[in-house]
Length: 465
Image (cartoon, rainbow, N blue to C red):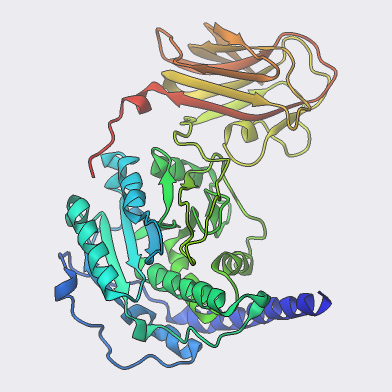
């Protein structure tokens, strides 16, 4: 164990030193990717790569082959940059295939307005040309509209442009076939990410066996906005592997080179953690509920059974419209009132004394028509809000530091620290939601989650694929 630990430390230190030097040297060479003219390209008519010379076997030299190693099989590349690129890589599976179901989920769970701001890039990463052609035909048949509208691109990289995938380092004591699989996966992602740089402002990585929550692009947009000017490298919208990891497009060339340079050292999710810390984001930033769920039953590696699920996933995430949060309960340290409403990993933590009449108030920026409300207090059965009513109001009054929700209507009371009401029936839009304490309590209180869904979202129609 001591030897393995020492070896792991040596690998990490080497990664940090080499990557820092490499990114510094390469930083002056990055240029904005050139957009291709909009066109429809089919697999049978795609010209070969711009260079027919084999890539050098040395990974550092071979990294220059990234930009010339990918072929566009189908789709239209538009000159206008989108908001979000959704990238996924797919290989031939020994058992079930989930790629088409994943694509259907991406498109059906997004409105037409959201799709106009999105492009999906699929890398068919298997070396079997028959599988590539068959899968391409299925995609063209089912998603021809998305291809022609520039909302879906299908790409492929030939085997000759990959670095060596056998005889690699056996880090972490992985079996040789496992090392080959994960090393190739790193190269697959490097090709995919490099191709996607410049297509949009942001890029999110998925896998080819996921379900998406409804309106995930709008939710992502809101979370990005909530970060303000705070620096970040990666935002996470799932706790599983490489699913739901978001990057700025300006960081993609470096990320692609990083994955390629260290492709045989460790699995991609390990490399991504190192990439984040190298760019000075020490802690992960993950939002809840998760926007993506692993749906596959069998792994792409040897078809083994895979029961992996994200218990933070919600098919229909809350809207939580923009709002200001107020409370007259004393705040403990950095557990601010905003944490209860932000749908992040944090929570509001209030200190005693907590008296009858204390409140926790959400003042919406615009009138909203509420459809569904969920309030959760306490953590592991402790620090529950024991007694409180949930009210909505049509006006917000501010007097100095005091904020009042007026014209209120009581929706109900917390039961064992929890409240949920579906199909809220109100005659008018509201401007505020208030939790009003109805009895003194001696314990502190945690409000960990306040979620609201608006009726407008329910009226949106899902697009056809």
